[in-house]
Image 1 (tube, rainbow, N blue to C red):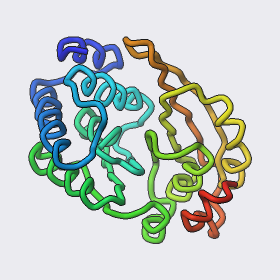
Image 2 (image 1 turned 30 degrees about the horizontal axis):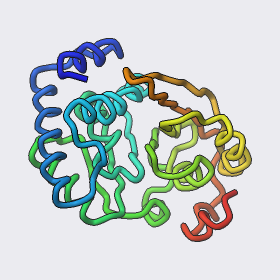
Image 3 (image 1 turned 90 degrees about the vertical axis):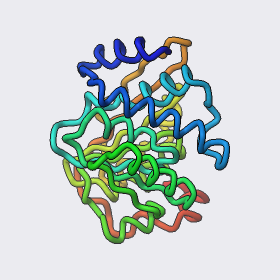
Image 4 (image 1 turned 90 degrees about the horizontal axis):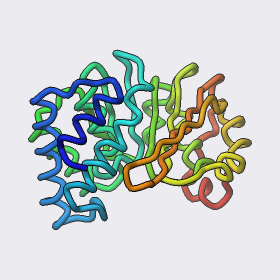
Length: 232
């Protein structure tokens, strides 16, 4: 995807991208490529791939988010989807939750270099962060972090009742959804929609929308070792 194609694709999502926003994306790409030589941030390093498979892919979530809310990006890694959404949606407050120190430092660098004021960065694991932020967010999201049952236990305790968790998946997800149904119900959620998109190369992207309909029992989330060993 070229930059011109990116601008057109973003417009198709309902957003007009300003010169300043486009400049921020270009600066972000440069930082990602240069810092990726020092630490492992992404396997996608070519400009066209980053534009489509990181930037545009992340922005597929933007139309689902109401104005002036807060969003938690769990396991943000190199900042996806949180940073692209923060650039395009300055009305949102976006918290990037990243447990790996080197990646969290990269996120701090991007925030500083791009001058993004609506981003907060927390260098913590979700099961620890919940101790200070339980049911604090209107929205939580994660991309390529874990299977849906594990991801639900990490995410839903941080979402307010009537808030929404969005799981961003890069493959068909029917079997994963079926296996996670008990976990989602136990944690106070219900799946409200599953939406699929196709990138220019034919890759499928899925956004699973899970509404928080009741409080998550206080015993969740468990320690990550327990979550991984015995998913709900």
